[in-house]
Image (cartoon, rainbow, N blue to C red):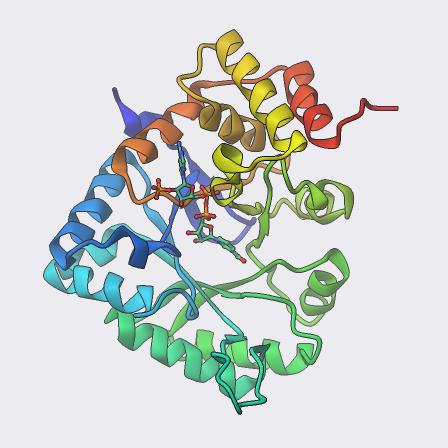
Length: 307
Ligand code: NAP
């Protein structure tokens, strides 16, 4: 199987970076329970498949996934040159403890972004981040301040490109209004359980600007397999029916094909640390759903037909 030829390169925005069409997510890395050598092996295996883009966040994992990733990179530093590293900032977790009234919150102030980038760089032991995303919309975000901070990070060589995650169209438009260059992505949840971005204009806005979304939790974080609800049963039944029609190996391949059919051309985030599942995801690139099959999943999700 020539996986490399299945994973295309995607121009994320007209003057932005190129990502692999499948992007390896590292949110769940702590659960994988791998040694540094096993993490390096996994990274090299997915690079071998053509998956050169990796997704992190400052807030992922305890211990931080960025640190675990950095330990692997240090074993073979030249691997850094074959990957594009995306990471995110802006979530401040505060563990709840008796007697402590403080809460987790968002922070997109200049100082917080700068500190977060420095920490991400040192955890991963790298010189620059390819793409930095603001992880969640912050109701206290000052767009001018954020863009001035982006400019400073670019000038210092610490970050090459900028984007957002989980932003609504007006939130994205606000930040974009202060920037001469396009934000290179909006990383959003897209799966048959959560089709909000189909309805709120997020994907239309990106298609209009020729900016590609990064689709997270395409398998709904595993709910696709284990949720006990009528909606989940309908979705599973329909995905299996279509898998049989198109000769897919399993329902997850149909879920990936369903997301990749979107005309805004998302790149697909993968969440598994099992290389066999990563290979199966990549093989879904061979599957093309018809319009009717795509809508059958939509109908299964909604529980009613189109008007
Ligand atoms: P996902 O692909 O929806 O879910 C992955 C989970 O599904 C893993 O626990 C995996 O377990 C399980 N799974 C996969 N195949 C399975 C099967 N056949 N049977 C049972 N379980 C199965 O992706 P995700 O991990 O939620 O998200 C992917 C990436 O998106 C993350 O790593 C992160 O980079 C990014 N993300 C971003 C945001 C954001 O706010 N921007 C939010 C969430 C995630 P195994 O590991 O055992 O295969």
